[in-house]
Image 1 (cartoon, rainbow, N blue to C red):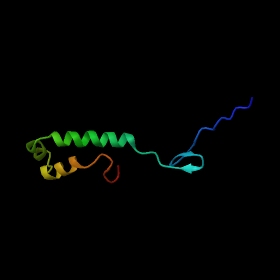
Image 2: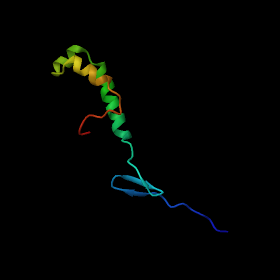
Image 3: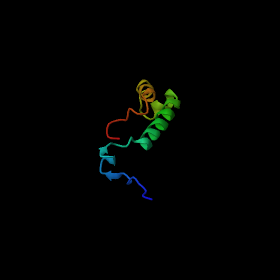
Length: 74
């Protein structure tokens, strides 16, 4: 009996390769971290934000961004 075992995907610098296709792995860990940060930012009061030198309107805008919309350099 001959078994046909598929080889495990190879990994490249940009992500895994499967059946000759190369794709980039989504940054799940970064998405989770950004979602938590934005959630916490959204719960701060205007006074707390001003104490840290953050404009409350800008903080509200940042907190409302979707988790997959990562800031530049992240």
